[in-house]
Length: 466
Image (cartoon, rainbow, N blue to C red; front, side, top):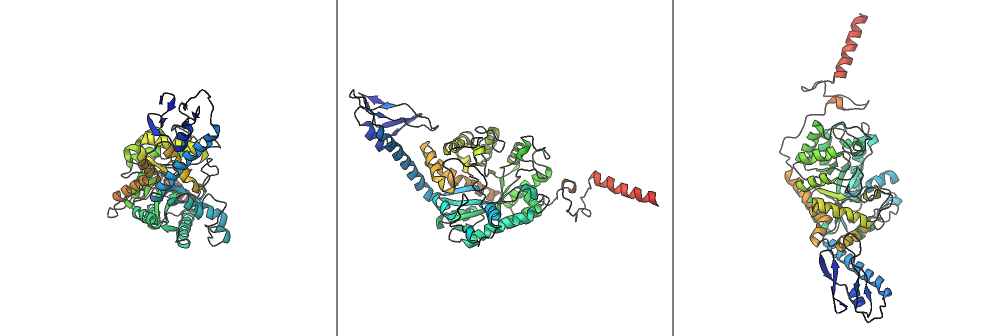
């Protein structure tokens, strides 16, 4: 807005006005100056605005960096102020896997000291600098452990998370409910929760699922990058894997119902689109994507398409945005601004209540410039504020959206309800070392046709030899 050659003390954003920052006002008051363009929510400049003209048309170039500096300081300061009261709840961090691969889970090794650990995205000083107030630590074991030692491996990863809390009690406190997260916020400690990444870790056993719950698991990712005998993974959508369950099998539906009964959050990162839709429609509680981004902005099958985002909106569920470059830009390089684009898109399609952070730190090899480690969260929050996110929306993305989902999961849970107990059909299981105790005597046991034919062949061969 201009009048008589003077710039008024307001700067234009698309659809609204805001007061000029002090440095911008100083610049506008310079004779013949030109105020640099404002950036809109998409990062692109709005129109130039002329300062008072005296015919000299001189431009005060040296003030422009000051404008940017003051603007950045303002949003960064506001971000830190918000985060002191509402710290980050991050949905997925693979530090426990790094502790296994680097130190074989020996936390007392000198090099494994979490106050000085240097070769990871995560350590205690970085968590403090990033205002991380709660973390779902990933208990992960790779797909090549399926039908082998997956259960043993996942127990060891759960154990190392508990030992982190034991070894650094001034920093970490292991919690298992939303109340524990809020209490940790008040104490200034990092609420540490366990998320088991990959349904193969329960070895197709409802009993193992329940046991992991009692050990502290509060979300289960239904698959990793491989099918389980009861759920399909995202590689089905690329054609690299074949669909086996068409989303969820009957047993997979039992797993979802039992997770609802127990109070375990259902995580749909890594699953196929058919599995996403099946779980979202079946679950009585909201679900999460602990570390996934928006498919419309980066067409990688690990991301969430818009029709699923609409289901996320309808079910009150949550997408915690992944920072991995390949899922952000679909290229090897990415920027903080592009991550903010994903947050913007999910907010637009699924609503502000559907947005969270799931950085995937220490589980990926490439991270955006500006988000190199867990200390950088305030810079991302500052970018959201720069894009005119409200304080309530920012607090939601930081923590309140996840707390809402977690509380809803807790309300749906009912330990007085009869547990699911029908086992997966024996014919669905693989593994040469697997025993069959219980199946042959169980009243509902029906051997697979191949097994019956093999038994008959053996009997007939024996009769011929008589």
